[in-house]
Image (cartoon, rainbow, N blue to C red; front, side, top):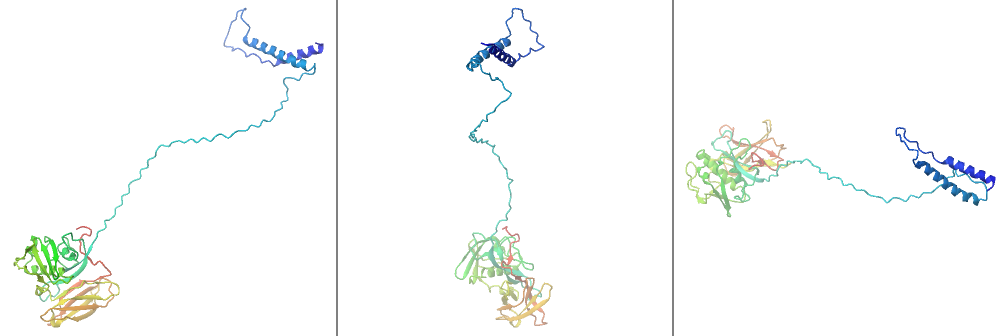
Length: 376
């Protein structure tokens, strides 16, 4: 090699040595003592071996260039070639996290619903003590209303009869029932003209208030049983057997009893039609009476006690005989009026045997005969 080549080789070696890393210093707190015949340090051996390898690799390159200039191994100018990195989309990973079951407790809602109570229509005859009574006998007045079903022992159409034996029967003010609550109906049968009513043993004792009370009790039962259906009479039995001794005087009831059986033990004026109406209709008031000259009088009394309308009708018979009467009352009723039916005394013209009935207007159900609706 020429002198110029020697100089270049020397410069290259110097550069390589300058580029070699310095060996790391030993920690100061560690003191290691070597004998003079110890082996060379591994780091120095490694560095020297690396230098030799570099020199051996550089010589062929240098010679292949024909003694030209050698580019420096390290250069302060770095050319960076942009690299396009294509990132493939990762396969989507669905992570399902199982949530613990959630139990939601909804507070129980208690709904109280009133039970629907089925009622049945009934017409019954109640008792009233008349004002200024001439005879002292009670009056019969028909009332229409609703009752609870009478049970299997009663046939349809006998609801009013059941109501008279119903414990806790509710009647409007001024009316009474002479049938004791201990009396019970065991069965009802009917043919073309007669209804047979089978009673329990309590029936035999009568009303418990004397002979007039017994007559009144029978009148209530007879009139209520025959109010519809075209029946003419009632045969009473007890446990299927004929009744030969009824009430305080031991009345014989072994034969059918008609409406005329105990008429003379009633007031001289009685009312057969329930006093109620609706809308613009006329109010019908009908009944039977035994009054002087067959003349029956009527008054409409308002809530303040004022007479707002008067009328009279002629019964089919009077002055010693019973006859039917009827009124058609045209008045603008509101429902707080009272109908008064009577006859004028022949002695002084004063109202006698007066029957007073409250008017029900625009009330299709009529009276509620159950003192505690919804309970038997």
